[in-house]
Amino acid sequence: MHTVRKTQFGFTLIEILTVVGIIGILISISSISLGSIQKRSRDNRRILDIKELQTALQQYHTNQPGGFYPTTMTILVTEKYLEKLPLDPLTKTAAPYGYTRLPAGCNNTANRYCLNYQLSITLESGVVHRVGPRTYN
Image (tube, rainbow, N blue to C red; front, side, top):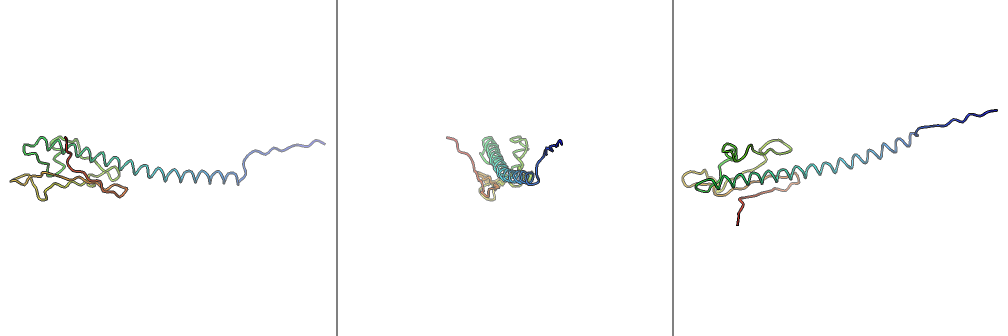
């Protein structure tokens, strides 16, 4: 009598479930690390945007006969110091970038000149990043 051998190809259910479980764990680990990398990237973009605003403010200050800063950041766009105000990388709005002209109440008229400023942004890490005028030696 002649016997026929059956050869089985394929994977068992346990092997398939094990592989799917390992893939799921790897995906969850990579998505967590990707999220933190994206937050850091957006925070770095915000810091670069603040530096760009700081440079434009310094150029504006240098070009003013009295050496003062603008009353609003939109002046930087209308007078061509910036092409446009930077947008927050997450919300796509300009609102998160705070501009405080100093001293309080200054309006660049009648000896009430804005002689200082502070730019600020709250980063996703929770840190408030603040800068003022650069000083060059």
